[in-house]
Image (cartoon, rainbow over all chains, first blue to last red; front, side, top):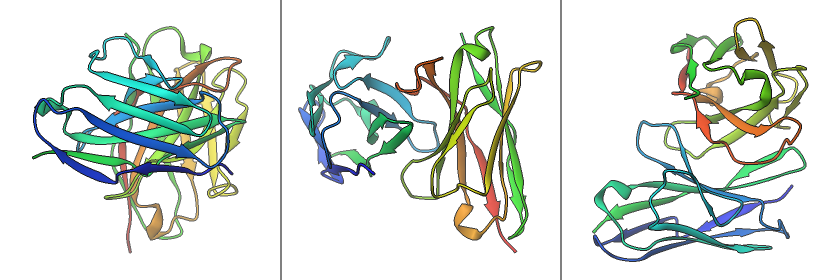
Length: 107
Length: 122
């Protein structure tokens, strides 16, 4: 099975900072990679699909890039409402694997 | 706007079974796959399986294979997830989520239910 890793596991940043999270797959997954935001006590929310496509209604400060085994998720200017845990997710061959998550806090 | 509404919290004893429902609003119930994802307290997300609400075909994660059954009722636009032989490690919030448009099994989970807390305790 394909394994997904994320780094860092947590981070603290100031409002307005640029925040970058990386996700690595154990083998080539093309662009079959999604990103979700989960706030405490809430269901996850889809932000980015197929590595770089912004879900409708999601603010443009969120973006994703990458293909193959290495992917990046970026918040261009961190806002207080972005405090959450972010998960990458691979899909393929009827397997759907989430990364361990990155918790983002305000410094 | 499609919504997925799940049944309420459950408390079960070890060895028992639990059945969680996920009702879809709107008229696209049979057009999209439904997934089940769980999250143990303080832990990450774990995919459990996928169902085609129209034909009822399923694929389950290896970890719960043999204990999980997903079914659908097209007359009520409801999908069910039953987990048997419950143990303490099954204590989690269980989510249903809408996946790709049939017949494309891949894709992102764009709509989620509100979650159902299942507690397994003696």
